[in-house]
Picture 1 (cartoon, rainbow, N blue to C red):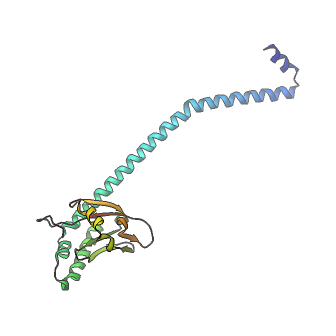
Picture 2: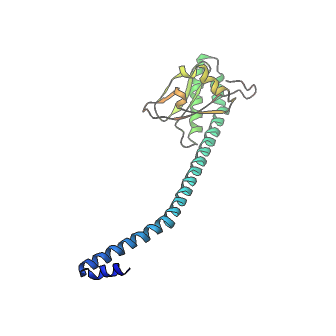
Picture 3: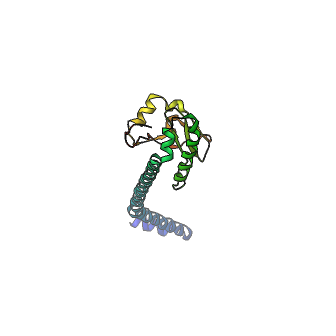
Length: 193
């Protein structure tokens, strides 16, 4: 300690000021780093972890609510008389008027819900009717393939959530879309319409 005092006493005033300034600066950096590492960073990490958890809970709740809303809309469409008439119509001369009535009904139902881009219903003969907010290309060849049909039918009236309908639907702008597919069954027989 004596050697350090002698060394410090032998310095010129300018060197003493610099040395003191450097020592004070090092002490300040050490204290601030200790506070940051010991108190601030752990509190920030805990807060960030809680924020991330709350965000994930919020996303899950939003998705659950959206899927529930889509399911309710889908059930309303399935139970709609005009939609069922269109799906059951065997007279080709009446199919287009039935399709128009079905589309009107779908539109009335769809406008009551938010975040729905398009709704299509498909008949067993490949004809379809629907509404869309965007230009949508439909690949019915994919929908007629056994794996696609089996995936939807094995839900027995439940729904299948897919991206772009596993290739059956493609928006003209190239963006991907979340699709919600289900079979519409006859209420009495529970057979697909």
